[in-house]
Image 1: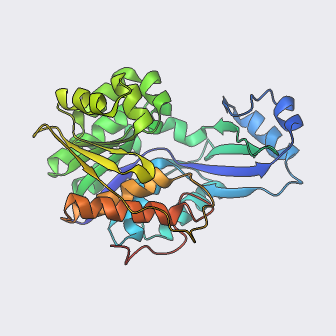
Image 2: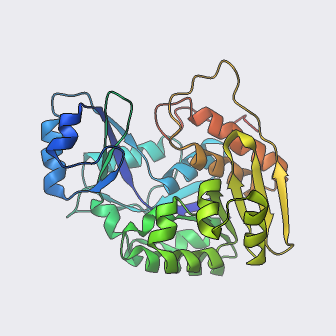
Length: 328
């Protein structure tokens, strides 16, 4: 196969900036919450912040996953929708920096690249103002089936469903990877996705060969709190999944065999400088999938995932700043 993984999903750039509470009040933002904004409000916010230092960092779960996979030595591509603007170029270049193929990323001439403005107040609280722009219009026409047919696996993310057309795009992509003999991986993304897109999530869960989620998402999905009950509920539905628990290890469920295996993972070292936890789960998934798609035993794949996550939390953003080859 030409690719280990083709990843499809949201394509945002984060704009991280320190503010005082008057900024939140001016734009009617609730501290710690997500506010969806239009292009006009985006521009007004950026104008109000023009004298502040803003860090623009590319994000997006699916893009983060394939970036880490390629950084670890894999072969991957990303499909998504950005604006034909500077932020779109930033997003694409950050993928190219880790050797991700971007030829099938669509540049929207009419809508800007998705921008998540993240004002941080003096108490460290982060709030979110989300302009979805081009990413909010991801649809079937943005899918390249030929590229997907040449991949061992397809990764799709729950956050991509912010586009009303993304579900049909995902179904088109799933059909393509099945024709090529590849596997489907679905990252749930967040409990708000589970609650907000129940029918779509149910379909994608059943279509996927493996799910990726953290414990909070697993609790939301099953309605259970106890870990044993969570595992039983998921296996009763025949689901294969990876459930991460940070430094407390990871469960790998095999729905066909009805089994759940727990793996310990390496913990952070005393000298590690934790800069940012954003993207740790995506990094684990990218490392794990690199291992799994290249024939690693599950224990070794989980160890690589944990090592990739450990590297990411020591960087300012959710993408690698250096190659991760050699972490195996």
